[in-house]
Image 1 (cartoon, rainbow, N blue to C red):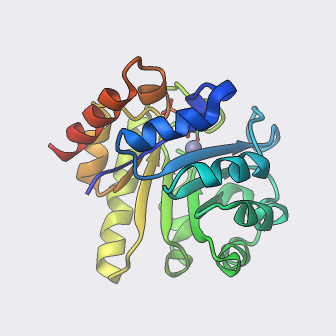
Image 2: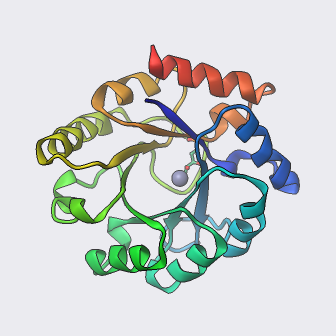
Image 3: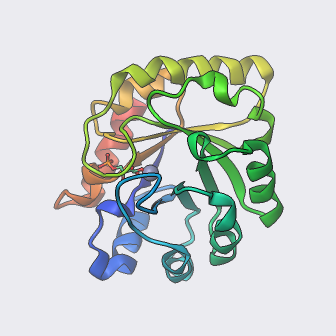
Length: 218
Ligand code: DX5
Ligand code: ZN
């Protein structure tokens, strides 16, 4: 099954609530929230107060992607604000196992994110501790970049390992997803697809979302 997680990074921030409601109505399965600190990535976006403000407006799970240094210091605040998934970059975690346990202890679902160049080997020993693995198919920091195709073999590699170990882990793809790029990712075993500009930069968001989903399901 193909699930779409619109990234509100590409939404109109002056009416964020309406923007979230619009994609929920259009058939989105999750809302993807990109948190950037100006240190781990060269951009600054939003913090827990945005998650808290959006929480009562939608029934969809809030998928919080932390692109920040020292995520441990903020995990509790994001969980309290209403995050359902909290994903952290392996490149930002000195004690990844501890960080994932910390997320779990808050009641949120832990996930780990890999930058395009980071090998799957880095997460071999935490697969039992995550509900989601997120593959970046752009370098994190900005929306609207082009899909990096060389990530697809990593997706396939992980998907085979997950099956061999009999685990139940969602594989999410983030960056440059559209009607074309979703296909090889589905074939490689991914299940959740973040889409920012391919949905929010379109006039008819519902049509754009459904077109990406059917391209993934065909
Ligand atoms: C990039 C963010 C993405 C971004 C995706 O650092 O993690 O979630 O919003 O945007 P598009 O779909 O435009 O590549
Ligand atoms: Zn993201």
